[in-house]
Image (cartoon, rainbow, N blue to C red):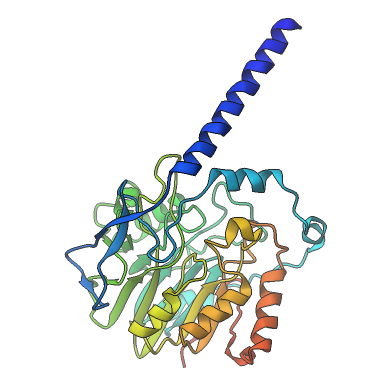
Length: 364
């Protein structure tokens, strides 16, 4: 018994030391902008832009709200009780899942929502994927099961990835796309090619950009620019903010599409409108926003998504990042309900275009 108590005591001391070490690191590890960088081979579209900010450790930094994830906040969330626990457990409503075959087999320009932040966009004859997640990726808890569409897709020209988090960049999905479509080109923020290079074929081109930089595409009729959002990156324990996160503006065939990826609220939406004053479709996340002490810096709440939409002076809001995976404390039905309430309050109900899973629309 005495030996067992000694072992338990040693384990408790080790846990205490680890937690104390994490807290100490949290208290002293701060993101401070000291430098700027970009891809020198790409065009920068914002005239007064210095480049993407870096801190003293070479990590990327949000230009308005320098941020690093805090282990103390993660511990607080893990040890706290969700005040909406019962409401969440009793919320059994789920988004319907449609058959995407008609859109994927067609040729007409438009947008298909594959769930979460995954979109298939056809624009000027180019097939574009945003943050594709097929099937049920590891480490994610599905609210709804969606069959992988890989067998239905005839061609993929471009794949754009907003950041390296596993609900946006999935290894198995990327490998499946690269294997079936060896001519597909993959794009992301600076250093994203370091993550992707072992997942794709040698024939799959990789290209990465800094914020406000325009990618070099083979088709001049489609333009895609990487923009700043308020977020962060990490795949492992020691690569925090090594890869750059961001959103995209896609232009072609007289249409402009904004895709936010993941983002907390900030001035970057107004800044996007200054560079791109005619955004037609505003694809923005509305889920995974609770608890606010944990999520506010990284994910918009529904009312903030509406504010972002008005700041960007866009025409149509297409919500995403809800309804497919269980990722936060809010009940599954809450994001869309609150979005509709806020839009009604602001007189913007006719500007919303919520989709069910695998639903699509064609450009007018």
